[in-house]
Image (cartoon, rainbow, N blue to C red; front, side, top):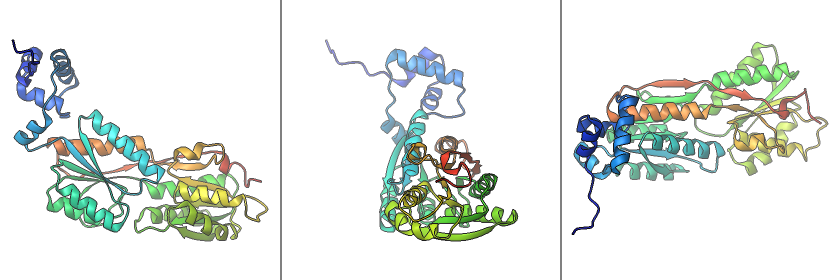
Length: 334
């Protein structure tokens, strides 16, 4: 007697669920066109029979793999690491398999893109990649649907999901003015994207609109050690409130205040609301980009592309909110 376990086939799941075999395939691949009730029936039948779909065979037959390429840079950045974690979790919940490529430099980015194109991914998500134009060109040449989780100012019509940096900058300005600050500075990120520039523009435009002046500005790469070297010069401006383009710059600025010869500590606001911002040592007020919603929308768009439900490019702006903490309580902290 052959004691090998019988391989369950999809038609047996279809028979048990009393639906078509094609519906079983679509339901188990996460096709959004399948109703929740039908998907539940299929999942229950599959669980009863112990059925596991053969993704490789399905890919060969349908020319789809259920694999989504995810390109990310700078995993030392807590925001990027958290965003990647959420993307992986949400892709898995949609029965999509993430294939992650990391490129921290221009050369690394090019290698990541080249390797990505050699795999049979169904779609690509680029997370905060400063090389958007290269990603767009490669995906277009390889006929890979693309979702950028950041801004893209090129002429190509691609799907974009990003935070409203201009609104966030204005929101920070309003908060600092409400706290009693009358002089302001901005700690910019030294990068090639428009993200830091948009945050700065939203902030400074509102400051000028309210009749106040900017008294200082500095820029640094998003590295704590470098920002710590730059921070004393910005503190010397005497600004009562400083908005930083991300939390790493803000942490360096807070650390610099502990050794700087200043009579009062300025109000400090960061951006990204990373986990460290809530630590008592910093208690940093920070802009939260609403990563939960941002990653959910990104994965939903990628899924519609994978299933062929829609290939139309979409542009979705996610509204941020401010997580206020001790770093902006009162006009200045001793």
